Image (cartoon, rainbow, N blue to C red; front, side, top):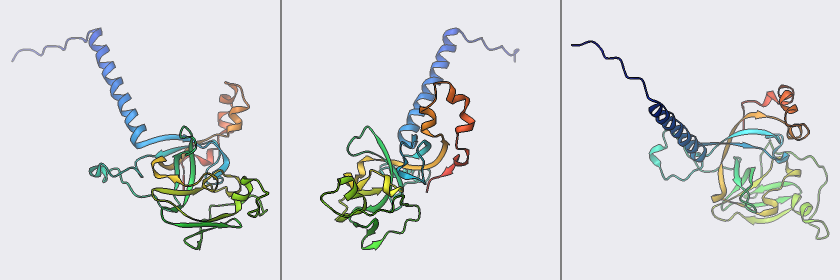
Amino acid sequence: MGPDVPPRPLTRRALFEEFLEATLVAVVLALFVRTFLFQAFVVPSPSMETTLLAGDHVVVNKFVFSPRAAAALDPILPRRAVRRGDVIVFKFPEDPRRDFVKRVVALAGDSLEIRDKLVFVNNRAENQPLAAHSDRRLWGDDPDLPESLRRRDQVASLRVPPESFFALGDNRDNSYDSRFWGPVPASNLKGRPLMVYWSFPQESVGSRGPFRWIKEFFAATRWSRTFQSVR
């Protein structure tokens, strides 16, 4: 056998092609993950306090509620149906360009009624310890009241239509949810929040200049919420 021949150095063209190929693979993988597996989401309002705070950055599991079109992937990408009590991220029915996060309280076919803030599903009082009320006042079903007050504390008996969910915010007295705009279509569902990976008060961002808030990153970040699971 003859002596080993040293490999030829890569030309600039070959280096560029390798770099381009690696970049394209990375982009495709990133798009696949974002489209089908996980997505970052920022909680925009206090409607889910204290479960989720405005400014919480969460990882959303996008495949857990996805259609069972690829059953072969179930062992590694487990799917399941939506359950009562699940926190979900979905496209807002009145404006699909916006994403909302709420908790499912009733499924398709369930009966639901709200009397004096109390939620009844299938004639049973809801048992949700994470739901909270910040306002002790009770508003009745008075036609002279604004719709925002009438629907907050009283919802006449209804049945959730097929392929839909009735969703409420945990901050029950400060949430724009299914009480006001109706059930969430299943087709609007995007996924389930898994955990908070970063929490930063929105007012901290808005009240600072473009560079000052970076300096105060460590002071303003709510470190106790980092990697907190969403239940």
